[in-house]
Image (cartoon, rainbow, N blue to C red; front, side, top):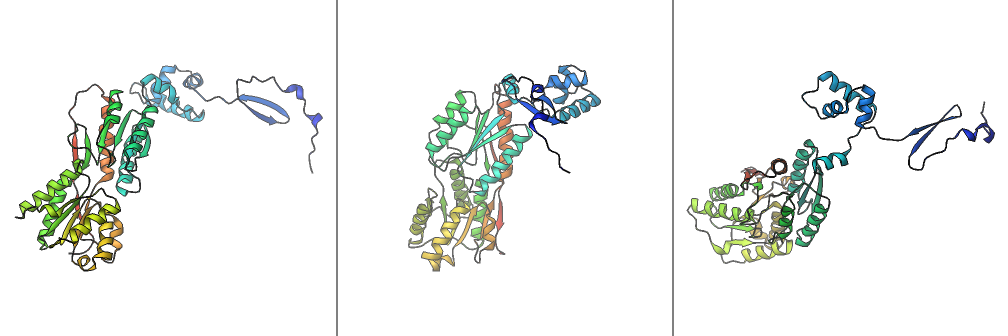
Length: 373
C-alpha cells in the first residue's frame, strides 16, 4: 500500500516566519512542522536544567575541590546529555592564552623528530594544549616564515630544533620580546643562553671510541655535523677525550665536518679514503649520514668497505636487515626528549615572571649492536 501526498495536504500557513539571524532545524512529524533553534548548549543551560548556579556548574566542569562528587556527576551527565562543548574563545580571552604550542623540526622524515614530536604532543594534550607543527627543511628562510606564522597564530610557546643554516637568532628573540618563551631541543647554537633538552652525545662518543679501541682500531675518524651546533661540539669533545683516555692523539686529518647533504658526505669520505693511511673506524654524526657513507664505501672503495667499522647515532631499525650491517649505533631517547622539553616549556608558560637560569638537560644514549661481536 502506498501513501500519496499532494501539495494541498500541507498547510503552508502553519510555517512560522523565520528570523534570518538564526539557524533552524525542521522536523516533520505527522505533517506538522516543529521549529527548533540549532544553538550550542552553554553553562547557563546546564545550570538552568539542574537548578543550580552557573558558578557551581563552572567549578564542577573544572574539577574544583569544593564541589561534591554527586553534584559533579550530575553536571557532567547533563553536559553530556546537552552535547555541551566549552567555549574555547571565551576561555582564551579570560586567561589571555590560546592554549597553542608550536614545534619546529628540520624534517619529519627523520624518525628521531617523529618520536620527539609524539612525546611533545602527549605532554601538550594532557595540559589541554593543541600543537602547530612546522618543518624548516634545513632552511633559515623557511624557519623565519614558520616562526612568523606561529606568532601570528598567537602561540603560547615554541620548541625548536633549528635548521643547519641558522646561526642568527633574531627571529626567535622577536618571539621572546613578545612574551613568548622559546626552548631548543636536539640542536642548539653554541654560546647562546637558551634552555635545551638533547642526548648525552659526549659520553656516547667516548663509549664509541672505547669500543673501537677494544677491537684493535688506532685510526679512528669522526664525520661531524655543522660546528655551530652544541651537539656537534659535544660529539667532538667526547671523541677527543675518548682517544686521549685510550692513549691516542687526535689527528686533524681524521676530524671532518659535513653539512649533512649526500654530496658533502661523499666528498668528506673520499677525502678520508684517499689518505696515505686511511681510517679503519669512523664515528658518524647520524645514522642517516651512515647510510651515505656505507653506500659510497661499497661502490667506490669496496676493499675499505670490508674492513672499515662504523658507529652512528640513532639506531635505525633498518640496519638490522642489512647483509653487512654497521658495527653499532648510539640509541637516543627522542620520545622522552619531547616529553621533557614539553614539560619545561609549559612550566615557562605557567610561570612567565619567574627568574630562571637556562636548563641544559641531556638524556643518556646506549650502544646498540646490529651484529654479534
